[in-house]
Image (tube, rainbow, N blue to C red; front, side, top):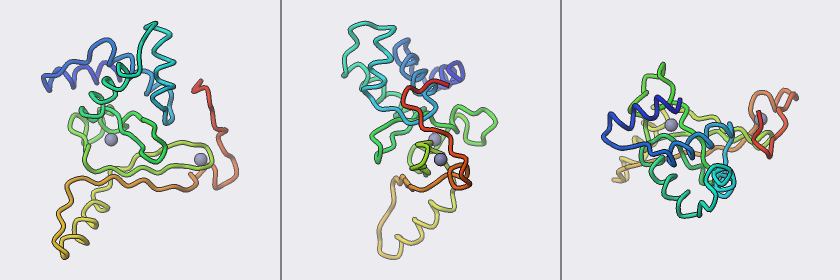
Length: 161
Ligand SMILES: [Zn+2]
Ligand SMILES: [Zn+2]
């Protein structure tokens, strides 16, 4: 996944530096939404003395490239499941301006949707009042299938597999 992210950046004329790559790796490894300070802790294992601005700059770059998303509700970051999945139709050109996230309050997992119907419904509903949607992020809270059927995946604080 890191290699495909690197190829993507090269194709766009930007650079996935070692540091940006490290931060992206930490986000992907977590497998669940991870906060900036957890990332800083993880980064310090490799880069002693890494400071918050370093992490924030790397996160800004990754957000700009659509490689990760920020879940506002959780102030945490997740890897974009679409842009890094070569089999997905949007691979290489995701949808940084329209995404939907399903946040499970049981296990903390976030599932990313890329449903154009939701975006179109929003655009249609607002057009009549003269509003033009430029970007939209939907964050829905609820229970995932596993949590609803009573076999919850325990929430992990340490991010270990
Ligand atoms: Zn995405
Ligand atoms: Zn769940």
